[in-house]
Amino acid sequence: MAKKLDEPQERGDFFKSLGTLFAGFVANRIEDTVTGLGPTLLRPPGALDEFEFLVKCTRCDKCIRACPENAVIKAPPTMGLALKTPYIDPRSIPCFLCTTLPCVAECEDEALVWPRLTRADGTVLEGAKAVRMGTARVKPGLCVTWGTLDREPRACRICVDRCPYPEEAIWISAPAEGASIGHPVVSADACTGCGLCVFSCPSEPTAIIVEPRRD
View 1 (cartoon, one colour):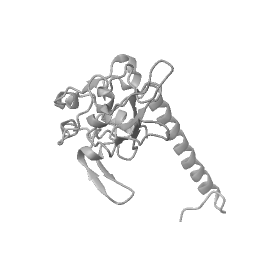
View 2: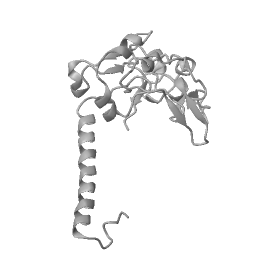
View 3: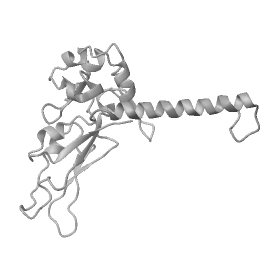
View 4: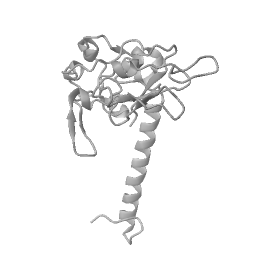
């Protein structure tokens, strides 16, 4: 039976336990170092955690060729260890969340896997709705629904209208007391990170970004 470090144990058992803890610490440090060497990229649907993704992805380009919208592109040399791995730049072309997710189907390396998600209430989601590439974040200083010294606030709901799951993943809040215009609100639990809101945002630079998932 396994013993805790604070329990009486033989010298060999003690060093074995200590070695296991040290190995785990080193593995975590290596993972943090590897995933932190390059910029954070928005991976295609179904991507594994970043470290495992970098290990399993063979840079075969099959997911890139499978995307019907040409949204999946190849990381350039400036991306460090992520060189030639697939990613998405939603301001250029977002993920349109194809029903069959052909990028996942073409990945024989299993760096991309069929999305399956169990919510806190026990609801099980699969496919496009279970995709969690990242989470959208609104920048109030750039969003036109907030006023600044240089402009008056104005109503806008383009990000909501372009979202594949409007009123669930993103919606416009009720105006605050004394205000006439509400603002975009993102649900981290429902947002797929597809980037359609980023692509459609009329502000320049964009007032909404997707922060890639980093587990």
